[in-house]
Length: 294
Length: 249
Image (cartoon, rainbow over all chains, first blue to last red; front, side):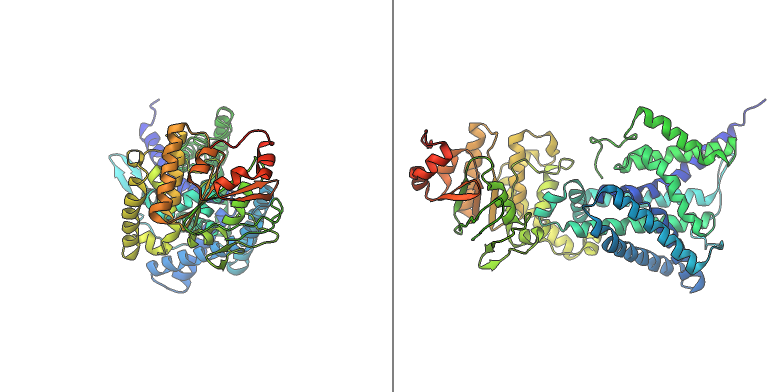
């Protein structure tokens, strides 16, 4: 019997490319965790909000795609800022578990609101990314998968440069690593924390629009981010590099599992892998103190 | 600047004269750092006021006080360890820049001009002045302790402060490093007219460079005056040194 090398290569490439999107969603988690010390369980709901806003602006109101995109990002950014102000800031200084519960509550509140406004139906999302497939010799890779990877890589790179070189980005890193000292230097730590939530909201909205277009739009979209928990646990909660590497690894594992073992086990195998890796490296691959800060 | 009545500090009141070096000394636990924390805005005093240039800033948040011109260093070096020396220093200038997030994000127009000007000022007034040009691109975590303290001073200077509050700037330094630091502090005060508030246990340095010394013990002021006056104050000698030794000059 001949082993089908073409299929293996295809599954692997699709896996790595789709890992870009996982890394992007993971970046949303990492941003908030680094910036404010909170794991935001409502990350998937940011994605959902972004997708629904975009659908409404583009399909229902008929705005052109670019305008709908800007309006969506602005709306989600505003929502994230309001959430930070109304829910997270009053809880600062409270035990971590209370804050976590608050983000879980926020997730179900957003979920319910979306369900109430738009209903639980599936909608067809407008296609943002070209669907034309890429062929590499005998290999055939869906266009959306490749373009989503390019988009995710561009956004992650933009954030990395922003935090490395821009003044506000450096101030955000400073506030994340030592808020008290940052405060004394005249950095408005509340402002940087608000900005952190806004950035994470924007990242989530973009991811939501892309994922929604590749699957379909329904309130279940929020659940995608829970799958990304495996990525951030594997990569280490506080490492952007970890999010990227772990995103690619999980993407690869998911794709190979789905390809060879079927879609049912696809959601289980990544977690089993993560479990095994965590036995050896309890802080994740990159979640150590020495790792380069964002 | 006057200051009165905090919990760990009981009815402490003193004035630092503009353009002079005022030292705050006292045994460990006397409340020196608490006093600094109250002045820079970390602790909210339950009673009492902080007045800066005739303005009552008792209720201003810490980052606002930084913008007004209060800069400080910490007893334990509080640099951002993952960053380079230059990034740390530039963060000191952060509060003085007024471009908003969006324009700073785009990095052009006024944001760019501000950034360039800040860079020039930092080059001349901070990096060359403190002789740390050779380490600018190193990570602060890799530096020896004495240099870390100097970088922290550099960051405070980049804030272009009117008052510089130094919490034990020479603790743990050898004699040569201490002399360097004393020279820098004197230059800062003499050439730039910056008011300096100094917490320090090194009596030799305190007596050499301060024009006024405030002695704290158990949260209260037990003596104020010139170095000579304080040295002779019997209450100070008793409380501070157990009444046995003389204060070394």
